[in-house]
Length: 188
Image (cartoon, rainbow, N blue to C red):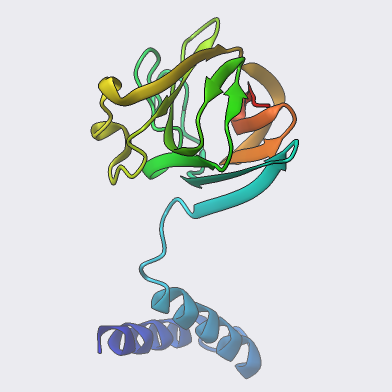
């Protein structure tokens, strides 16, 4: 019922707003788009991304919320330095490895792990894999006692900017990009 009322209100508002400025088919197209957006009211501000791929012959899956920069000052502000960051939005980012892998030279057993980082103003960043992978509120529920692996990774600052956070399965393993950050995590 709420969706029908919302759709009606959006349709009425759009028709009033556009009035005589556009022809009938344009109005109908815009109303359909607005109605579709309204029916997707549960849509996340930071879309859920799920990526699967292989490194060598090993299958890896990563799931994360992908926030946008939206003109915000990220590093040292929205994402503070020297504090555990969930490396994504909403629930904790997690990776699922089907076979044992090495992460920056350290062995990681098969399983699901939440992925956290500790950004630093200069030098290496700490990448953390934690056994408690199904955290509804990301770093707010993070417990260091469940850390399985911690490694240091050198960030690369690029000249081009990536609007939405991405975590890709590519050489050298996982590559995190957001704004001008590129954080390559070696996995074999």
